[in-house]
Picture 1: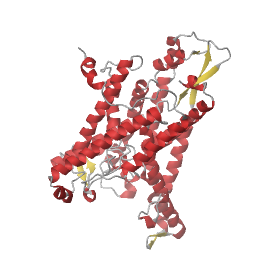
Picture 2: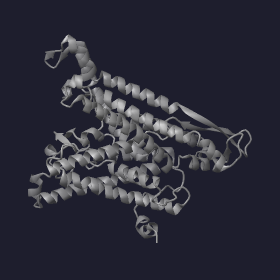
Picture 3: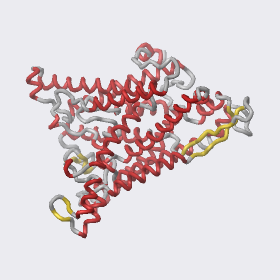
Picture 4: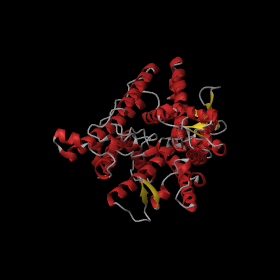
Length: 487
């Protein structure tokens, strides 16, 4: 008996959002999407009952925007468990250890979806329990424990229970948008979180308690003052460019332009309909064929490694120096320091920031981060293409089933697949590595509002694809016959 036969009774009973029976009107899709987005914003502002807010620590740091996490709220875990479960499934599927045919077998598709939900629940526990009980990141409020009479341990379980509910809610919110809305919930939540930080970075001013925003930067430039003291002429330009947000503004605009341009770069394979004379089309193979979403997997893996290091440091008190040394919760040496991604200009501009790390350690860390993002971006892009039915084989079947063929070639799935194999694998690897390079560059130069490079890339790419999907939906609303062509 295979594992599928053993696990099937459990996996097929995993709760799921019902698919619509027919076509969902565009206005209704927008209503569902907007409603879920408002619910997400609401839940990110509902604080965990029993949590000592003042003593709590930022768990994910600058990864929070990528993981759509709301610090100290019911959405504390964000999409982290969903992304981690996807990493595990992609690795198992890539090694062909699952034995599931998710392309043609409906039973295997149901088992895969059930297995994904089960893994998400497991990851919620594996991520949430250490936050509450092991690392001291989310301490219980002793006043609440005394008033309820359940002790500190009881309040900790209460905090974890709220986090568990939040993790389950975001799982089904993502499923609602995927089936009833526009785009994907994961992408929408990332865009929402990053957009908040971008707007905050633009509007930040001295009276808002932060002196690094665009408004305050121009205040420095015009008045030559910083706070109550004058800015010296020698470091005035450095202050405006680096301590302000002008360099971040330049980087943000540059990333926007590069991603939009890369989305438009494509190889178009001509297609014709074998049954309808004159009916022609093109299949585009974009430079960023796998999209930017595989970057979530790379950054989530790095975030989990850093989270593990902080837990070990908190539990052991002092780790061996070769593993890691910490100051204020951040790695300053050892393995976990070298594996930590470069998050800001201060992590590598040693000549400006006066860092305590030797130059060779800083350069080694930058090199490792660049290597991880280039290679990891390419590898996860390949996994993403294969598991989302975007590979040559699955795409060839889709083209053949739609009645299209490549002019000058026989109408055969194998022939179409061979033509696609000339482009898709190579473009996937190049696009994944390019996205990794852009993410590291954006982190090193800094962006508006301190948004991570990966978060900015995701926001631009997801917004661009959301625009394309909305345009496609409007086209199908105006011309119902187009629905068959779009599937």
